[in-house]
Length: 185
Image: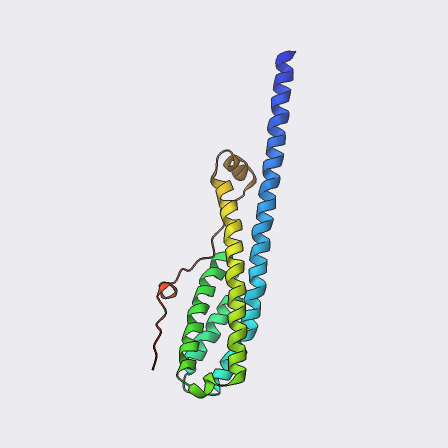
């Protein structure tokens, strides 16, 4: 009789542990999804701002059509990404093309003095700061999830219920890791 009570007690304890562990995974998974959605809102704001920026630069630098085409293509690819990994890769590519757009803009002093361009540039800078902060939050929640997925004994629950490691939102392209060249003319 005592052995039966001990077995029932162990089953109840293990059952409660499984429920609590699974619920903590659900909570972290929802935090990761919320963090990515928040970042996605800022990315959408940036997508909406880019055409205005391109059009403003086009007015001054009409012969830079290759740069404009690259920015537009990168924006389209980033907007149409369906997976997190694809979104990360396309966002890194878009960031690189935006750098080339600003490099083109630097060659036109009258553009640098244009209030519309300066306002758009300031708005983009503000959005980029928001994106950077939301990436930090996303990566922190992903770190928590990945640690829990890989740690014992929670990895047992993760495997039982199909919780997987999530990708970090990090700089992947080599050109993104290069130092910015500052030149004074």
